[in-house]
Length: 315
Image 1: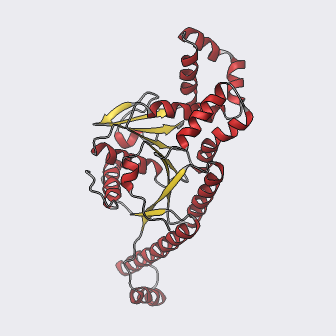
Image 2 (image 1 turned 180 degrees about the vertical axis):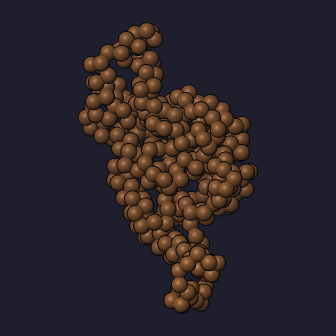
Image 3 (image 1 turned 45 degrees about the vertical axis):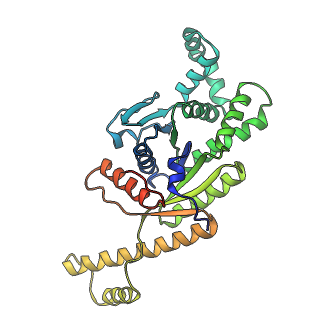
């Protein structure tokens, strides 16, 4: 397993793309990494890619729109929606805003733009390339794995369909960003079999479709590091045979112990599979309490990521 990649390589990179199965903590990871980078004095923008319902806004207590808005020192957020990105794209070609509005108001034009293969994805990626020039670090909270894979593969697919023209030019630009040495894709996973399966599939697919895309790191969220000895596990098994299930303190304590034991086994299995089948650096992040709200959770996650670095990072 490659273990030389450091979280600081993301913090001091140019573009970080974050993907994973829905519900694994992609947005929290993006927010935590953004805060960590902003604490180093970097000008950061966290972007949701065409999110129908923002998950980023509640983490910062702010409304998320198409244009970046600063929510903390050095840290901005936005949501790159396809229609607004298309509007901006046409504006860069057609100088008159009134004509742009007329173009996009035409139902046939809208149908054509929506149906053109790769158009939606390439337009979204084009906006990301423009945003990259305005910030030191761009962190992109991608859609769930399936849509993210389509987004990442779209430039190469579009180049195979269009040899010239604006989609070709934008695809060349987008592919160059994806293949840049300063662009990294981070996969976020959980110690669950189905999630690990999807993580492996996503990694394999992207390495085949975008061979030069750097995928150096997996963040394993809600991991349970070993805390029970072999003797303690044996004791749990024996106690489970003699103590009936109930709602008393003994039963609840036994249930908690068995649950912890299962989580530790699942974490070990996930780490082994990721090492063998993906073969990149894996950062296992422990379960973090949500008792004090999402903002504290992101703060604690940023601290957990910083602790994995061999470099001294401000928090």
